[in-house]
Amino acid sequence: MTAATLIEALTAHHTATLAVAEAFPDEELRAQHHPLLSPLGWHVGHCSFIETLWVQGELLGRSSEVDRWKALYQPDMAYKPGRGLRLPERGTLAAWCVERHEENLGVLADPPARLRAHPLLHDDYLPRFLLQHYAQHLETMDYVRAQRDPGDRPVPSPANEPGWIVLPPGRYGIGATGPDAYDNEQEMHCVRLAGARLGRRPVTNDEFAEFMADGGYERPELWDDAGWQWRARHGVDRPGYWARHRDQGPPRGDSAVQGLSHFEATAYARWAGARLPHEYEWEAAHRHGLLAGVGSTWEWCANPFHPYPGFLPFPYEGYSNPWFDGRHYVLRGASASTRPAVRRPSFRNFYTREVRHVFSGLRLALDL
Image 1 (cartoon, rainbow, N blue to C red):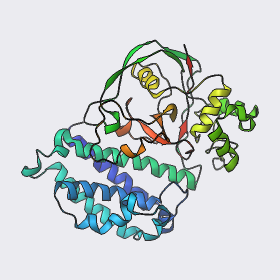
Image 2: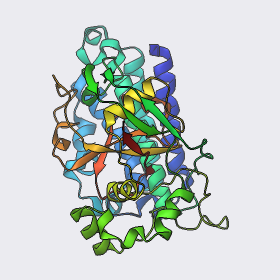
Image 3: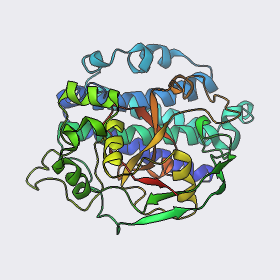
Image 4: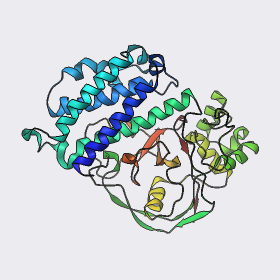
């Protein structure tokens, strides 16, 4: 993207975020519909706050607006269950966001001469970073909306034909080095893979229904210990998004299953006599054009989130580093709610194994 198209894209994300504030009354903007998800109104304000923190605070050294709102919009300072109660009313929130957007875009579109050599502006890094931040929160707001009303989510397109593709043994490039890449995607490096068969496309609702009909949720031999304990503790017996879609009935059988935890994805793979792919296998296959259905659902991978060789945190220590803890696992791909700014072969999503409010499914893998 050129600098001008980046500003246009960021403006479009501003508009999309404000549209959420305009679409719901105050009580809905403040409502928390899932314990792991913040209210819609908080996401609206948080996106504008983070933009202001970087543009006004980090670039210009102006801290007044950051100091005023950080106790509400900085995640590590705001207790999630209390965020909704502290939000300003809708009109005040929207007006503040519009004011911040106009001021921040003015700086990004035409930075003061003294800032043009700033590391955050090299290769337009900061507008790229902010664009992706908005994109991720816009998708998260779709998760909130789906928790509020299971019918308020895009249903994946019908799946491609089933079958397997072959990823030959060999050396493959993994990661990215461009200005869009997050720190956890860098540096690009080569890995040697033994080769694998991967499902041509993600597992569908109809295929997952066969697992359920065969007692998959009642068979401990299909689950690891942590997964079985989680399933029993929460009484899980179906994917998280198998609620009825308004008057449309259950999810369409020929589309990718969504609302799976890593535990469920692993159990299904064992039932199918397969496994989950390692993220390197997934990325290598995608880069070579072998995978169909990418973008219909986020796809759980077998491995924990980890740093690549030579990892350096940027633009701040806490974006990726805290999550290299062995508890967060990688998802690859995208969903119908994923914006173009974060759709790329190297992008790494990550959640703990029990999470199932995201639009998450799986693709199978087999050893050669």
